[in-house]
Image 1 (cartoon, rainbow, N blue to C red):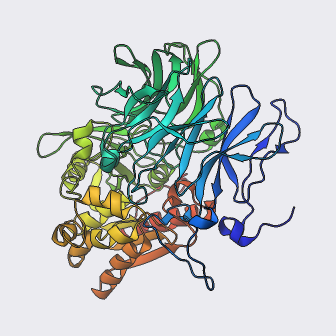
Image 2: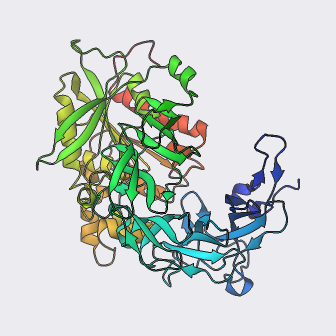
Image 3: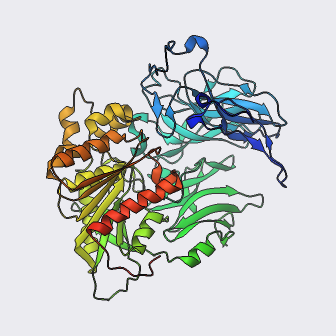
Length: 589
């Protein structure tokens, strides 16, 4: 093959294409040859056509001004995105004959398109896009449909909402999707299940009274997200994933009564499922001490059986720790869900104290829970107790709980985290003089905030952090929409508020030894946030070190290069070993 030109592909690498292969095996056949690659293939119902997404340049008359050298001319506010880089091109919908041939572009313009799905009769493709006049500044997402031969896309839902994950009913008359009506509210709003007519209109929420989000809000560093589309079981019944109190379950929604019931649940995280021909359901699930595997159950969830054991040999080589659930009551009486992983070799009743590391999740509108974290298990293997909880701001406890942090980061959530710590200390075997704290993204923010407001911790590690809301607004790829919504202001009119809730304002109060870990290609929480913390603490003569990870973005801990993920863990745990060593065992795994 002719090598790809560097300006044709990301990082100068040959772009990914779509291939087909017989289900019985054999040689794969390349289907697409798109200049910038192709992704998200979807078979048409008759198997004759494949719809997919590919990046496309604007037409010449819409292009940016002519360049003189190799400068980059930016004319739009939404000009780069974490994990992608500069948005020089737009992701559009194409089709191609399954037997091979030329691809046909169905959508165009300066808008991004995603999540294509065919109607049952194969006459149209439903997809998600933002085509508002202010689309460069807003994060709205709307459901559209376009005829399989192209033409002007039809808007099926309001354009001031946040909708995604479309799926068309078996009879082709309605589209199901998830989301909410206030795109500015982001993920602090409960994600509901909706349907609308395939021709547009008749918008209906079927889970408004459920007060739990549809989809998987769980977190893990051994798994990085999947499609959370609803699944039509009949024209009147839909199943989907739902996040509640640390668990992700399969729920069923009756579209006639809007009743929601759990079909497959338990203290675990289900990340994907699909019905099979005989009515049973196959799903992938795991819990805090078991990586994800495939299971099968009857249509009603009965007679569950594990299908795969891909991790059995690995689990035989290591010891994975089971968590201890804590009953935590915050200062105002609110219940906070929390867990502690005991350190490797721990024995109840043994008269010894163990160091503890407090882990804080990102988001803030995400959810710790019943899914394995390699990082936490490694800390436990090294002799550390690991505390993790879902403070206010977390998903899974209702919309009011999740929205509490808006405009009050640090102030509204630190008390919950500290209440969980105090409850953990009540166990009696944790050394109050060897406490550490760490977190990434929002968790990095709260780590910065905590060490600026208390000296209880012996060491801290802040990862891909936020430090300054004032500068975050103009430097993050989502600072001008997510930032304005979450922090409650803009720099030119709300400077006092933005700085009040910025950890950099309290940097002179930090005495805890702090390690800063940050990816140099992070556009979500730009590395300038970490640089501000490091330079300020160095200027003040405090103990601080800065680990910059090259070529990695905001998702380093979940999908980064394996060697750099190992480097991150080495520095993260090494910092705690240096400042609050555990009296561990030689045979720790």
